[in-house]
Image 1 (cartoon, rainbow, N blue to C red):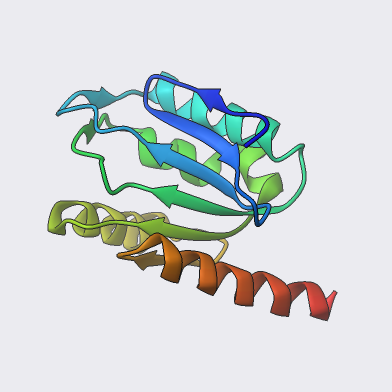
Image 2 (spheres, rainbow, N blue to C red):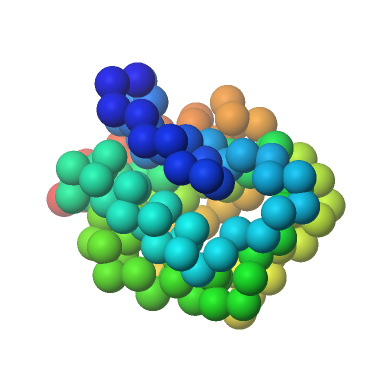
Length: 137
């Protein structure tokens, strides 16, 4: 992990596969603000060197809340839209599964987004998806 950006809500870095990992912190019922969401988008853009990159959102430790408008920022942020390739979200709780399902259903991401309960299965899926899509280009 060369370039790790530490934010209040998460750590962001490129893993050994070249995937951008957003390791979300617990926050213990703190609220993710719109400012936090914009900082995450800017940091992901920076870590990805402005290139299309598969994303891994590791939300296993997340126990916080999101203020209104946060989902829209993740959906409509111009910088994130330029680099977002395919997204794997790692979750282990019913609450986070409901949160991600709500995001998928109502915000309709433009790129493929899939949920997993383990990092290994998420990385395997991203590797296969990324490899298949780069072969087509």
